[in-house]
Image (cartoon, rainbow, N blue to C red):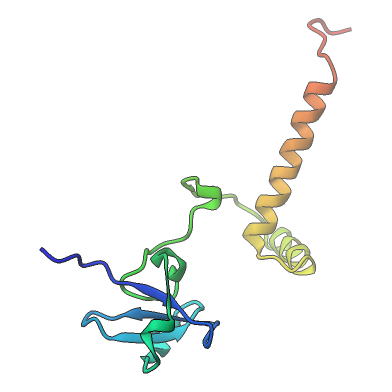
Length: 133
């Protein structure tokens, strides 16, 4: 049985595009951004100058032979944490994320991790008394 794995390539001539095989094995080129596969065109350049790369790099572009879903953070499996917020809290957090040029979820994750680190450092720095004064 033949290997159904499709190959993904990059090219120095087209650094902001992926080049990969379609379902017929024909080389196609598409923008290396979200849903870029929708703007694919046939690749007519020399295949010799292409560098084969890991198909996971095309994640999110819509290429049907690449992995789907979000990339795991730091190689760990991810899970969702829901949190209820008021409209004004969300707006304030979004403003802070925009100020730091980050997405809201990235900003929130970073801020929560920093707060957790501070809280854990404080707990380790002060010995707790077993009795209340």
